[in-house]
Amino acid sequence: MSVAIKAEHLTKVYKIYERDIDRLKETFHPFHKRYSRDFFALNDLSFEIRRGENVGLVGKNGAGKSTLLKIITGVLTPTNGKLEVNGRIASLLELGAGFNPEMTGVENIYMNGLLIGHSREVMDAKVDDIIAFADIGDFINQPVKTYSSGMFARLAFAVNAFVEPDILIVDEALSVGDAFFQSKCMDKMRSMIQGGVTVIFVSHDTFAVKNLCERAFLMKNGKILMDAPAKEVVEVYRNMLLESRGELTDEQSARRDSLVENLRAEKKFFDEEKISAESLERGKDIFQKNATYQRSGDGRAVFENIQLLSLDGEILNEVVFGQKVILRMVVRFQKDVAFLGMGYHIRNATGIDLVYTDSRFNDTKAIFDAKAGEVYVIDWRFKVELRQELYDIACVISSPIDETLAAVELCDFVPCAVQFQVVSPNVYMSLTGGYVHWHNDLSVRRVELK
Image (cartoon, rainbow, N blue to C red; front, top):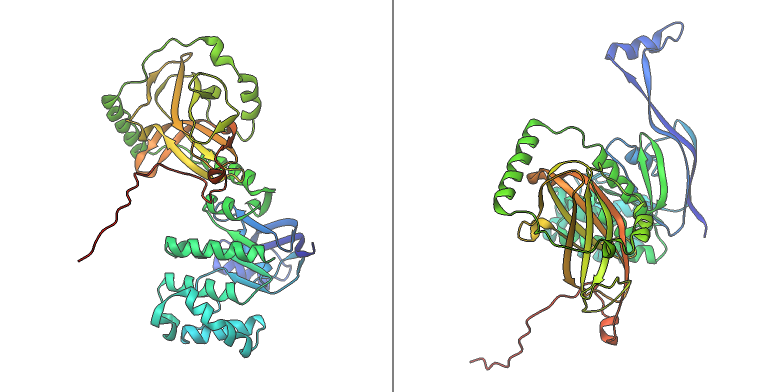
């Protein structure tokens, strides 16, 4: 597989001046005295992206993602280092970039095709497909300065997707589109990847990154901190975001206290039940080993063990489609905690969350006023109706910060707590196209219409 993009020690430095006059002082100083400081937007990046790879870029604002993409597309030049790009590039870096606002949508389609190297005849064959995909109606014949941001996104993506680039770069431009259009764009990008197009995708939507990309870069302060499978990079990035939340504001603290009081009034914690200590120890060694992967949390409460059980209490590694199971969490409190909620995600092999639930969805069940040293057992009972495949269960326990922002203090998060294989005795069920099945009340009637 040939190289599409290769960077060697890529660096981009900007001079930062405290005052405008300092720029003139530095320019004309007879002894070249510096009045500026260097800001490294990119700092010594080296990487290779092979033709046909789909790579995600994640990181906080200011990490250097957009600067890197602008250098790849030729909008910026690096201060130091080398960059090799092989193939035609189509990019969506900023809405409307490359569009002439006075020209119509159709005229801009032809202009962008010519800029990427296509002849008028080639664009004649593509223009109908582009217009149909953009689906902006009669606005296609209006000047693009009259377009909304959503129309810009639709037309820009359609043009770049259908001019048959070798490399497609998308930088958050699809976030303004509606959900249906975003889904259509994702499907189109997948078909482009299957056709051998190299895709670089930048998004704060970590689910989209995991869904689309096999590989990802985690960027921070102009450097690539991690280059690994997208599933692993996204987990590290999520943990970084949780750790950087910082101190609570007075308003958030008040909201949290109010929420806890309201929940305490609604429900008490789980009833006490005698469970044998021996049964809670089964599979603990395997769990503790698996739990070390990307585990995070403040440790006020921790998972001692997590088991997937049959209704008879047997540990399961294999589940038959339609089988009822118990997901058992054993939680030990290291410190006093006023409120603890819990939840789990079921993920497929590529790390996509297929099922999510937490205790707020279950009659407000939670743990209140737990003391250090106490142990609680939390049982989730559900029927497994998933496609025949291998799945992971990620488990989380947390305390609320701000319900309006869905913000929590993470006590313990285990991305790979349990792994299980779904099998199906029914051939039809094993071949079903979707991942998740749910029960339907089905009615079929013949009617006579007058």
